[in-house]
Length: 102
Length: 144
Image (cartoon, rainbow over all chains, first blue to last red):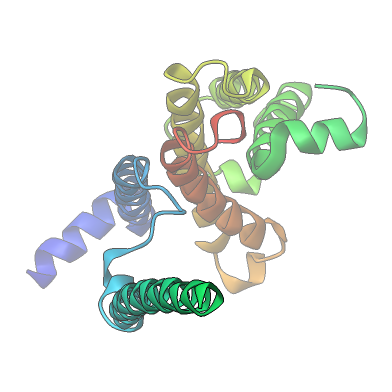
């Protein structure tokens, strides 16, 4: 193997081999950047990556949903209180009217 | 594009390095024609073993002008523009790397040219330009 390498170097010199090696490296670089560029061309920079939704953002979404549920219950309670107050108002008006009639 | 400094920067945006590389290519081609090979162009020693100096000069000028044309179109050729820019950058990367190799593959006593780091960096810039031409073509429209 060493003899073959020596023969090749003595025939061409080391420089063309270096040239071909650099040529191949750069061609691979061109191929890699071009394919990577093609692949990334559809990606949007402002798209939220999926992994971001796993931990803190996911917890936040749960918290917001829980807060919304609490708000819904509070609204229902407030509506009941409002209805009770209206009933009290009607009852007090009836009492007042009856007391006037006497 | 206006010819003001602001207009030029706005037109080329993040592709100013590509425009610079293209103009350098044209300039090198003109220099080689003005002072034909064999002059003392150590950076071309590796290439002139296979091709003539005139070929290198016209290669530089042709590729340079194609790149400048594609950049001047500035997104008006959404299909062909990125391909032309990528091919030009690929040709540039190949030739800059060979020129870099010609400068460094000599004995330390002959390392008198300061062009080696320039050609090395230009090779990387061209590879990044290829990526940018493909990756940004649908993203920023005219600014890709």
